[in-house]
Amino acid sequence: AEAAARMTFEQAADACLAQRRSGFNSASHEATWWAPLPLHVLPTLGGRPVASIGIGDVVAVLEPIWLDKHRTATLVRGRIEAVLNWAISNEKRPGPNPAEWNDNLRHRLPAVSKAMRESDARPAVPVNDIARWYAACTAAPWPAARALQAVALTATRSIEARGMRWAELGGDVWTVPADRMKMREIHRVPISEPLLQLIEAQRKAVYDGPYRGSPLVFPSATGRELADLAVSDVMKKLHAADVAAGGGGWLDPASNAPAVPHGLRATFRIWAQEQRVDRDVAELALAHRERNAVVRAYARDDLLGLRRPVMAAWAGLLTGTTPVSTVGPE
Image (cartoon, rainbow, N blue to C red):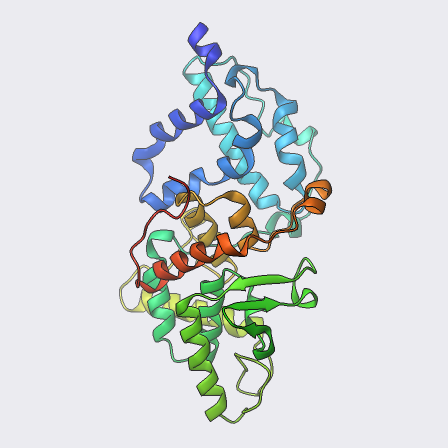
């Protein structure tokens, strides 16, 4: 009983994961299941005795993301529930489970619309299959596939990569102006070697094409900025072509839905977690804004120097040009 009282939530989560491991169909599937815990739960509940966690503790974790990242919050709630169910079943804490939804959390958390429930549903390419996906994207003949390569290499949003301008490129940094960013803050992206090669190939293609002088790195066939649909269609075509050739396509391990462009950012985030990349470095690479206004006011450094080797390693994974290695702390 004393040992059970000392068990922390993180220890229970590790044990729960070990018990579930045989049911995962790949290392990527396991990483996807685990990823919400270190991102959203362990910083708050990890060191707490698993027997002491109550509904108020669960609500405190979920409330900050419940409305604007509802799908993520739903996954987080499910992971907490699974860990606490393991603890209850193994007599590490008493029931009932404070993370249960029916007749419990549904009365403590705000109702959400269907749009909110689906707002951050972004099926991702499994990490262990991302290099094969990138090779297929690189081989694709459609101009929009080049923009999709940039989305993958930079882990930026589709609209940011599609709108990349020559004037934004300087040396080994791509500087996206604030008016093109979701958070309305300048975002600097280190240019990896594969990204540089892609940009130089586009320079030649644009110069030799009908839109010489275009300010866009990835202009459409009409010279305008590529539509979001054009890049999404490439993703669908890549999946369909792989399935037609006898492959499995690229399905999100959690939802089993075909991956979409925005899901490439989720793939990057899962990979970064697997590689033990510092959370702040990974969040800055994704241009996620710090929620705490006080912390944000003091966090002036965008950690470009620390992000550079991370993006180089990520690009190496995509292109197969460098071995996969740990880029986080030893």
